[in-house]
Length: 91
Image 1 (cartoon, one colour):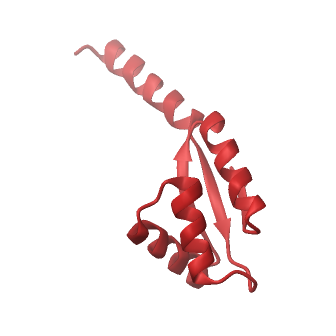
Image 2 (spheres, rainbow, N blue to C red; image 1 turned 120 degrees about the vertical axis):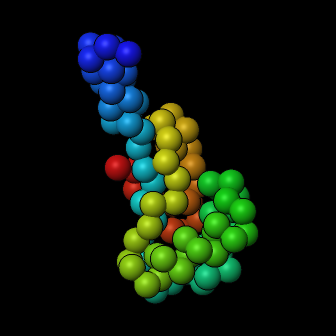
């Protein structure tokens, strides 16, 4: 692979990564672990284990990336989290 081909490939990869967004879930003093876990399973298609791990990370670190992808996929998922009373945003 030539240097030029490699640079083009790296540029495409960088562009793809930049187009990826994240849903960040923030800790609060209102929602129970069970509610957060159930909501992550429903809204983000997490397994029970993923949802539990994310809930613990949010609890101890104050926030956690719970889903990564294109904005068009994350927008409805983030809306579901917000409607369930969780604090989340897309960055």
